[in-house]
Structures are given as structure tokens and as C-alpha cells.
Length: 204
Image 1 (spheres, rainbow, N blue to C red):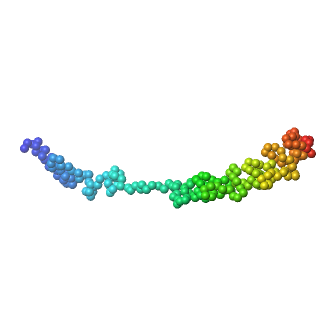
Image 2 (cartoon, rainbow, N blue to C red):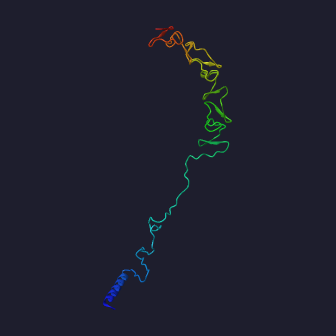
Image 3 (cartoon, rainbow, N blue to C red):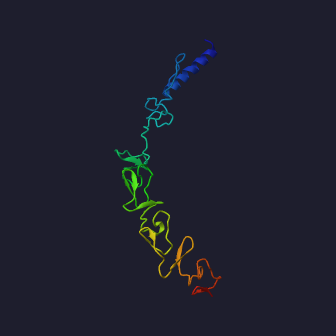
């Protein structure tokens, strides 16, 4: 062995002894791999991201709750003959706010009978109200037939204006006293000048 070869061999022996003393291993053949430096202290070789390693690179093992959320506005389920109207169970045969169907409200004073709005005895529907046309001054004898303001309705007929205001003037009619009314002084439609007065049917 030449002097140079002996130097190389001696160097390899020294390196081997040093590595062995430090707890390492030596590549003794082709393809051998030393992975001791990658293992943990316990030699278990934990993988980053595994459940016991604390890493965040592994698969997420948390449980996902996919139960549908309660919206709070789910329609109610009703037993016949009731039905759902605005989220509540109602009977359209008797419910005055949903008479016959959802949203069909009866007029003021009417009741729902067999799904039909019915006014009480002696009343009819005028506009949005049940009225007695035999006594209602705004609908005397029929819907939309008003008596002069101040007059009353009896048996569907407008009574005469009261003694204090005996004359009916204007449209809509109003009971007034032409002896003192500056807008109807002496007769209907005769108005006194601004700031004037009416005395005994004459402007002053």
C-alpha cells in the first residue's frame, strides 16, 4: 500500500470511530440511509400533522355538524279543516281575518260564517263596515246616502234639520241657521264679506 493510500485509510477509520462514539451510524453499503436524526427522542418517527404531533399539516379529524338550522319561520302543519295563513293555523270557515281563504278579511262588524262574511241582523256592508241603513246618517236608506250634517236618520229617511239650524245648505248638505250664518246669510250660498257678520239674515 502506498503512503497516500495509507493516509486515506487511516482517515476513514478515524471518522468511523468518531461517528460511532457520537451515537451515529455509518453507511456500510450502497443505498443505505441513516434516518436516525429525523426520529424523535422516542424513535417513533412522528409525522407532521398527525393527531399526536400537534402539527397542522395533516388531515382535519374534527366532526362537522351538518344538521339543518331551524329558520324559525317554517310553516306550521295544521289538521284539516284548518290551513296555514301567515305562519299560523286558522279555520277559513270561521276566521274573520281569513274568511274563505288567507288574507280575505271581513268588514268591520262582520263575522265569518261558513267561509262567508256576514253582517249582523239588520246591517249591510257599506264600504268596509257593516251599517244599519235605517239609522245611519251617512248611509240613510242605502249605502252612500248621507243626511245633512246635523240631521238624523229614522227608518231609512233623513229627518228634518233641528230647530236651532232648520235649513239644509250645500253639498254635502249641512244644517244651518241662515239668520246668523255668514256663509249662508238670509239664504243658502249668500256669503258676507270677509270680516262681516250676519244678523237676522243680513250682512253687516
